[in-house]
Length: 107
Length: 120
Image 1 (cartoon, each protein chain N blue to C red):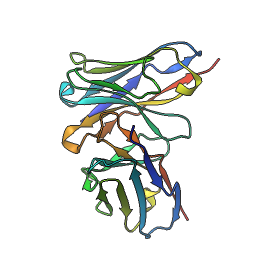
Image 2: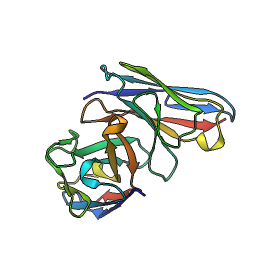
Image 3: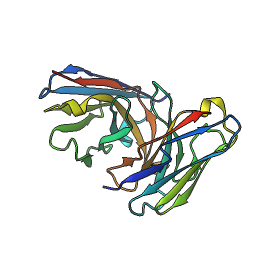
Image 4: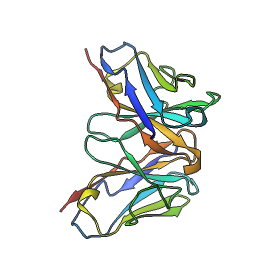
């Protein structure tokens, strides 16, 4: 199975900040990398697919980049509603795998 | 509007069985792969299983292989997860999720989940 490693596990930031979360795959996954946001008590929501493409309705302050084994999610000008847990996911193989998550907290 | 509604969760003893259902609406069900993803209390997301639109292709996580069976009834637009030989480690919130091939196989819609608790 392909292992996905996210860093950092948690992150504190203030409204208006720009933050970056990194996701590394244990082998190349080309650009088959997706990002999800999960708020407490809610199901995950798709933010970005194919490493850099914004899902419908997702604000443009979210952006993704990378290919191969290293990927980043950047959130610019943090808003109060952005404080949540973020997961990366590889969809290169049918047996998809998720990263362990990054909790973004308010400083 | 796409809707996915899970049901069938509950409290079961170790070694027991459960069948989860996910009722889908608002899209052409038989043209999408469907997945089960679970989340243990306070933990991250763990993919469980996937089934292709025509049921021709099925894959499982190693942690459930041989114990869980994913299936679908396209006429009823319903996804199922049959779970046998349940252990405490299977406790968690079980989500069904639609997989979109036009979104690089990302999971673009999720249900709200059904809770499975395995305890003696």
